[in-house]
Length: 111
Image (cartoon, rainbow, N blue to C red; front, side, top):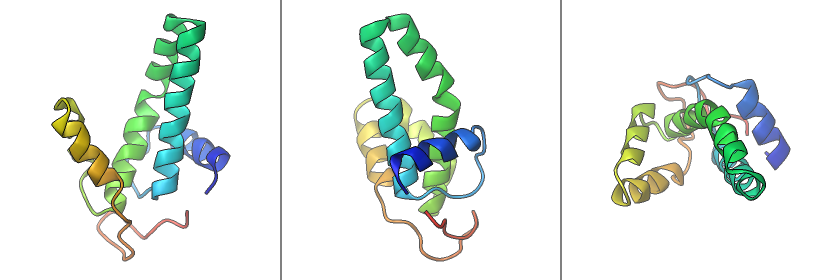
């Protein structure tokens, strides 16, 4: 999956918390959100906030699907709320390889 496909797919599944998302889908969308927020911060702080708010729901959705791909609950994203240690734990969970078998969240994605 390339950058454009990942961003397009995440916006198509804007609020879809069901299913699975492979690593490239999550990390390309993460890069898009980070780069967009940084670039817009230089233009205007208000635009950066609007962009971040507009991409919050799809970010949570793709994060949930990414955790599902590793056979974990999407609710684990609440770990983000713990400063530093929670962030390290979440990054560790999100870089884990995909579960190659069917799990309770569905079949492995084709991405």
